[in-house]
Image 1 (tube, rainbow, N blue to C red):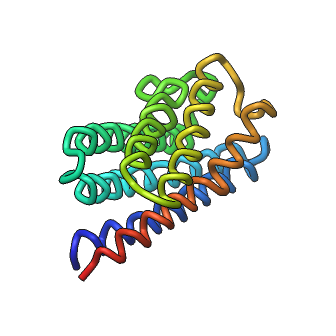
Image 2 (cartoon, rainbow, N blue to C red; image 1 turned 90 degrees about the vertical axis):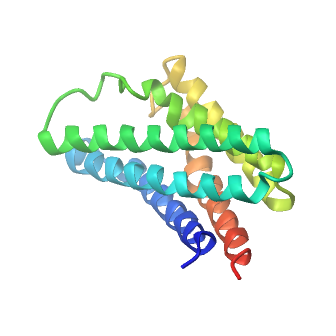
Image 3 (tube, rainbow, N blue to C red; image 1 turned 180 degrees about the horizontal axis):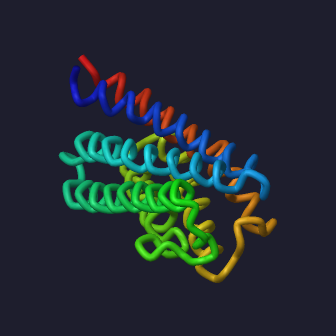
Length: 191
């Protein structure tokens, strides 16, 4: 298996785990909080790790044209992916251990800085280095991620209507579409 094929599959799986995370987040009720948060954490953890492989492949794809920006995008994407994975692992650990810390911001990823802010910067950077639909969808996805991070940063709650709309658009449309398009592009690069 080539890295291009591997990263293409990682992109498809990242689309699937992102969609599963979003659906689980919306479907979780107060009655099944532990179980729902455990699922959310597992999906976020898996999606973060998968995203690192996708950003590495995007770096390979554009590094000859813009090596500095490609490296910056890789570093931001890896930071955001690992941040999301750590955030998910923390959330999963809280659910498994039945700890009550859900009102505290995650110390590693406060208010989604890595998950939303840094990942949004990486997606925007790679989107600007790509063309066509990848560029447009990537920029929309990046803008939604940055809106989510800023909304959480200023104290917005996940249940606030001002954050629900961009969260739904990002999680149910932009995230899966971006990763499916990237997966297709990477898959076509396979010999």
